[in-house]
Length: 527
Image (cartoon, rainbow, N blue to C red; front, side, top):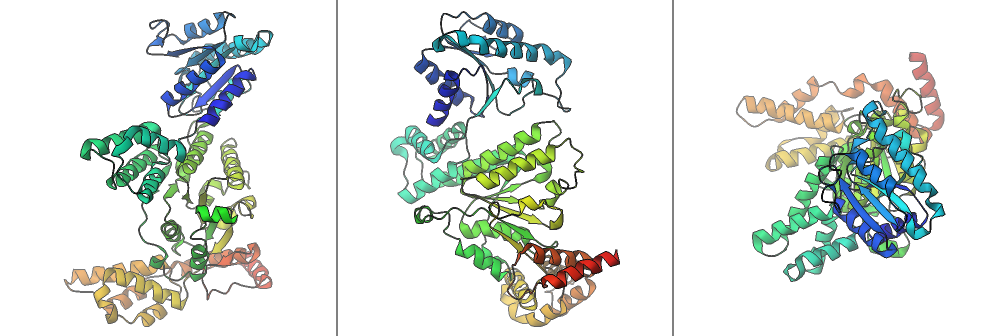
């Protein structure tokens, strides 16, 4: 908060005439502006469309043009900060990125005022005017971009959360140091209002804040993330032991299991940046992403690429900023981007067809991945990885590329064991795991799971337990994707060799580079 106040004061001192403040915490912004105005000995005035000017008993209520007229007529006897709360919504562009005719007078008057206030240079610094627009989202008309300076108010840091909890709860906080730290970390990503609300709920229920508060805070966080419509908070329970095979990937993850700790920072280690998991459908990419978060005991956020691109021009850019801000506020965490090629696969071809929105969103994401200092670990998955732009894959943005091929014989045995132990632990000895694995050659992990469910369906229909014969029949009747999509698999293997991607499996032997080039030629000939 102190850094934001300093930034505000610096902007006012530097004669910025028009500020656009983006924050979900209106009250916090008001408090910061009031403190800055007090330090600068400036007058500050607040207006909203429902109640008008706060200092004039509702004057200009419902009339934004009249409110702007007051700003223009302000005398030069004292420095003034005019805060207009709802004007940003009134001038927000439509779905085509353009403002409507009815919005034009407001936009034009704001532009005029910005130009006039910029000429307040002739006044002493303490007598200048500043117009502040407030909004929860950045929806700025193109016509005002040159005159406007955007300021984002971040969610509270861990230190600010600690101060807030102490102030709100005081001696009613009944938690040991470790659980207290867990509570504070659970509160990351929530606004001050939401934190106060969930703590009040704890006090109303038991008169104290104890271990049960952590679960309540996590529920509030899930609700908060769900409301964004873009991110999903995914609860994780099982670690890498629930994944059959992929031993190279497991080893890589376990070596870095303590890399997000303070001890790692003291050692000089930077936080891991991210991974790309590439392979055909059903090979365990999404499951691996979830188990990485569980293995590292970090919250998992799933980014819905499809919902990231909104219908209103400028909304997608606002949404990616919102995603980044929320992920950093919750950090350390894992950000899971599933099937990344569906969102960014058309960028290099120039066929995005969305007036450059995909490229701008992608550029914002790339810059953040390169420069981020917050411990947010990005796990991207891709089925058709060759569609992804090359700049996404370079070192510095992602730590490693892993290729997830079809499971080997040993891995298929492990996958059968994982599922059968979960579903029929008491009957695991009734099944010849080695034989099942041999019969299911070229099956993916997802196909093996479905084969087991199909066998269970047969047994259930007979009102008895499913048998080894049911499993063999299900395997025989299933045509694996590998039989249908062999050219795609070969092309992905070729990409893995060319890009230097590591195999996630110990026994997976990728082609040599010369073999890969021959394979590409063969595929071209087939087409």
